[in-house]
Image (tube, rainbow, N blue to C red; front, side, top):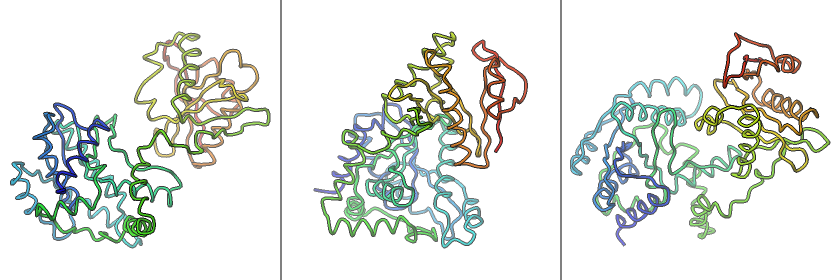
Amino acid sequence: MKAIRTVLACIRKADQQYNLINHGDKILIGLSGGKDSVVLTYALSLYQKFSHTNFEIQPVIMDLGFPNFDFTVMRDFCESLGLKLMVIDNTEVYRILQIQQKDKDHLPCSICSRMKKASMNKIANELGFNKVSFAHHADDAIETYMMNTLFGGRVASFSPKMHLERADITFIRPLINVRESDIIKLIKEENLPVMQSTCPANQHTRREDMKNLLKEIYHSYPIAKDNLLTMLSNYEKEDLWGKEIYHQVNQNGLTIKPVISSMDMMYVLDIRQRVFIKEQNVSYEEEVITSEEQEAKHFLIYVKDIPVGTIRYRMTGNREFKLERFAILKEYRGHEYGKEAFLYLVNKLEEDYNPCTIYFNAQYQLLDYYKKLGFVEEGDTFYKANIKHIRMVKRI
């Protein structure tokens, strides 16, 4: 089978699987000139024609300031597809990377990646584009998973689709199901132009180490190649210890549990509805703010096997944490469950992020209670949801 048919079939599957492209979408394509982004641009230009979805694409290339950068071949390639290449001057990136490199062996890839994404967000907003498409493929996703597992101590990879609430931009990765071998095959079959990378760190990174490690694994265990990709979306079989973590607060069965599952979140919202909405007459719109719910790390407070309260925090600045939505069910108050759980979380933040600032907006009638826990009032009182509040702060 010709590679283009394989690639387009994978794009269609990803589109249907993850709802990547909709009618009316205006999509910026991050075109670096490498094989992956060239195939993405070429394939999406064809996908427009048979997908029965009306969407617009705009390839964008960034001049990051690397030596010997020449986008001429990409300009001609885009014109051959009936597209006009947009060139963005980001030449300050290379200078910043050189400063940040310090005594490291190569330029810091993570900083470069963040700066490129931020720039694409800015361009998309300025031009009225609602989506940004990157050319990360299936093998990139597996390599990222391996790096996070081996070097980060976490099970994670990038997402096929991610909405950035503040920027109101959605990142999509249409090649998420495409294997790198099919990308290479397509480049050869269609004789597509590829620019040589001018980045000094090219092929000298930890990702390159992962590529080589995975080659050895696939050579010894061929079935692993498909299984590792299947694993990333096999939510029905996901079974890790994180769902079972209950941090022990005391020896009497009081624990604090990170919210992991949808059932955990249902308990959280039920407790908040009973305490804030029904008991304190806070409106649902003021209590549940979607963007904040997504940013926050939520916790349930358990007494033995019963969820009796909840609390969450959000990182609002560099080493700055805001505690929120602290609630204990009425029938479980008076036993210091809330106090012990609250102090446990505060101490955990201090231990993990010292130095740091921890603050929250306390209901004013509880001012003395929180002062005894080591917090001090800051600023004037204010009303929120018709309840008098004051900001309480602890700096460590």
